[in-house]
Structure formats: C-alpha cells, structure tokens
Image 1 (cartoon, one colour):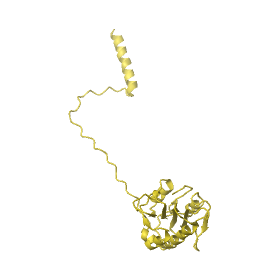
Image 2 (image 1 turned 60 degrees about the horizontal axis):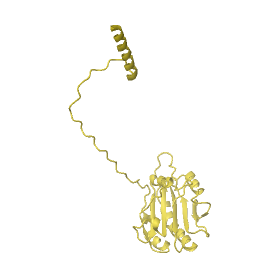
Image 3 (image 1 turned 90 degrees about the horizontal axis):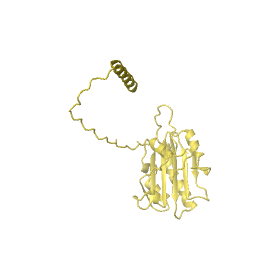
Length: 231
C-alpha cells in the first residue's frame, strides 16, 4: 500500500511539474496582506496641440484685406479653416502649412455651407517630385496653364468648367496652392479675375520670404495632393 501511495504521489508531482513548467517545490503559502491597495489613478488624455505653422506670414500679409475685397464678386470675410479629412491635407498640416480661407456671409457659418469661398495654402518643404506629382494628379486634371512669367506657376480655370478655379506654384522653399468655389452667379470672368488678383498678391509675398534653414534632405510635403482629391 505504501508503495502504491508513493507511486501516486510521484505521478502527481510529475503532472504538476508539467503544468507549471517547473519541477521545483512550491513556495510555502503565506497569509494575504491586510494593507489596502492604493487606488489606481484615472488616466487623462494629453491635450492635443495644433501643428506649428512654419511659414513666417499671416493671412493678411499673404493676401491683404483690400485684395480680398476686390477679388471676390461679393463681400467675403476670413473664416476658420476647415482641414479636409484626407491624408494629403493632414500631411500639409503636419508640415506646418499656412492655411487661409475666406467666404461670403456669416463668418461663423461652416465654409462647406457657403455658396462662395476661396483659400490659399502655403506648404513648406515641397520637393520638385511632390510638386510634379500634384500637377499630374486628379486635383489638376490636365487643366493647368502657365500663369505669368515666373516658372513653375500655373492656373486652373477652364472656360467650360469655371465653377472652381485656382492656381498653384513652386517657389524656392514653398509650394502654394489656391482655389475659389462659386456655386452662385459665377462667370468665367469673375473666377479668372479672382485667380489673377489673389496670385498677384500671394506669390510675391511667398517668394520674398527668406530662405528656410534646412537640416538634412528637404521634406517631401504633398502640396495637397499625391493624386488625392481635396476640397
């Protein structure tokens, strides 16, 4: 009988060792502590901070109020920029782009509900590859025409589809893109006049900026559109 019990105990010991992965004896049982555990602190979400703009201009310096007043066919006010929810525009924001927007009517009304609004975005660190990729993308759609005498400067305002018109350019350190949507009484003349007036103010202001300090290779900012549609 003793030999059978001893064998059974030995077998149980082997099973326990297999389940625990350790054949060593279990530590002696100790009474649980009576100390009260400290409450677990409630985690708090870190406050999100907006990306820092890396373009040393204000919107009024980029396109002065007098130019805004003359460019739009109806009075327009500065409105809060609504970043389109797509990867290309997020890339612009992370790159430190300056985004300026104007629209008709109540400034507190979302721009997506306005009949007429326009914008200019200046993106630092746009590369030649990124610019050419944008130019070849669906945002432009082959409707670009040279604008003025400066290189790498184009307008988009086809005479048979002028509800949206705009322009884009590549300068030494920045990419510039701009556009105006008019769902009201737009004409080709009013839309193309907007392009002429706003580009004549914004592009010289960007070209006059001092050269940016570069650390390593320039960042390939998207200039809103590696074949990605934006509003």
